[in-house]
Amino acid sequence: MLAGKPWEISVLVARPLITTLAAFVLVAAASAANPASTDKQLAMKLVVAQGDVPSMWRRSPVQHPPISIIRCLARPALTTTARASSYFFTPNLVTTGANVTSAATVFKSKTNASSYYRTIVRTFPACLRRVARLGRPHDAISVARPLSFPRYGDQSGAWWLGVTSRFGGREIRYHWVLVRTGRAVFGDLFLFARGYVEVPGLTNVQAEQEIVRQELGRARGSA
Image 1 (cartoon, rainbow, N blue to C red):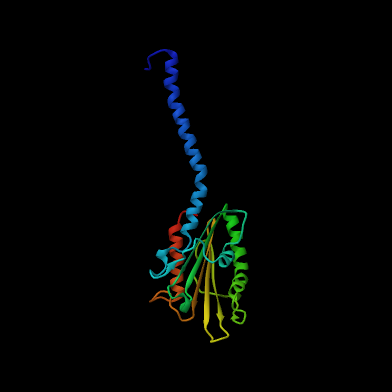
Image 2: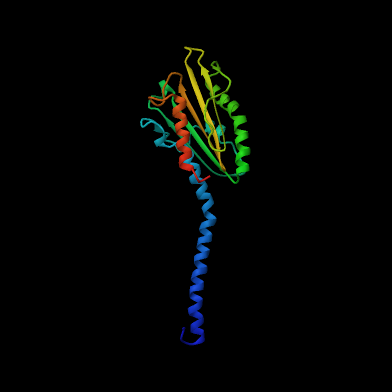
């Protein structure tokens, strides 16, 4: 039983209430700020990480990968809540051409993400061909063809195209996979000289599939 004057009792009762209200305001503020932070974390989980590629591969020293490729993988959208990208390459990049560019975009809703996925599937091949043409006006660039990949996430697809030099016949292969998982869409673009093996003991397609599985594994339950 509380003892004391009536005003003293009122103060004793009010203080816990004020503390509770203050705590509620802090939790509410943190919750309001949390979605953007959570979406950024999700985007980061869905791009290629150092542990996904062979140990000798290096991460780009610059903050952003080749901007021309990122513009193909991550086109502007008003419903975007977070983005992330990464770029890794082999030490002998000049001779093998091997590298991977990765980009992920998170949206406000699954409907927004699904619409974006359908758009990027349609626009990416032509965008990539324009990028591949830069500096190679005389090279032969093939049409995009499907790659044999399992289905990943809610929507996915994989394709390839080749660029053959008119001088020497050297061929470069582009492989790319696009995936929607929940509210997020990510894409990985692999480039390598034909005949180059990305991971010893695996075909390049098998190595690429393993990378996609690792990306999805990190993000499981977050989309």
